Length: 335
Image (tube, rainbow, N blue to C red):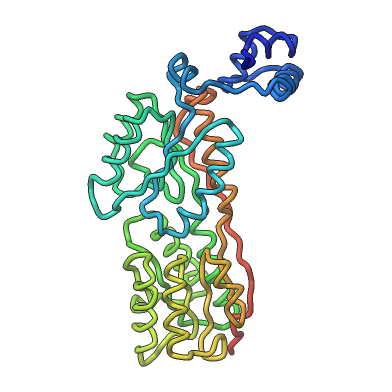
């Protein structure tokens, strides 16, 4: 015969209400928590999530919404979000959406709300305040990752994009480079705009002007990274260094570099972003900017849990984490 919540309470020496509070994610005394966990393990007690959901109106599930399941950032962070959610008793429903479709995000938010999920973590593209209002009305908090949306009221977890782009560009300038190509995403998104701002800041600080022809800002695809390199290398006064500010952009740029047999760093210094795998398999090892993906996922889940458990009901919070530079051998010092 299966154990019941009454059995758990009896073995743990606490009330049934205390066990119920613990199972449903509430805070209990540390001593009680340990006793309850021990009793659950000893009795092999299984929580009936369907019955609990009917009683608490919580499904213990969270929707994770990313623009594309082929996107490196989104796929990389999914695992860490899932680990953190699972550790807190939640399951994950993954959705992607067409960022080029003005209603793409809205349709998937509606889908997840109809699935009665308890919260949403998402990379916001084309999201609207009315979508957030709809989720709020349904008591479904949303946390953004990767980028802020200042015009929309939500918690968000990002990196300091200005800072990492500034430090990478400054590293190139400190090594004597004055003509630095920058490959970025679409203008108008704060991730791109902030990285461009960091690039410009390093130039201004060094007393260098920014050549607009060395700014290639289209999208974050491999094709865009490749095309940017074609443009840069066809210039009569071509750059001595290139900074590709995204994973797929880095892949596309490296494809061109390999195809044309450009020798790094003797013929061109190069810095990529996000992709540690390509950085370490390439010879020589690439210098690369790295986001704290695990910490971003963990922080996003923490913010969402605080909203779902009503431990925080204040103004939207934006947590900016620091990215780091993994220095390789792809930057040459020139005079």
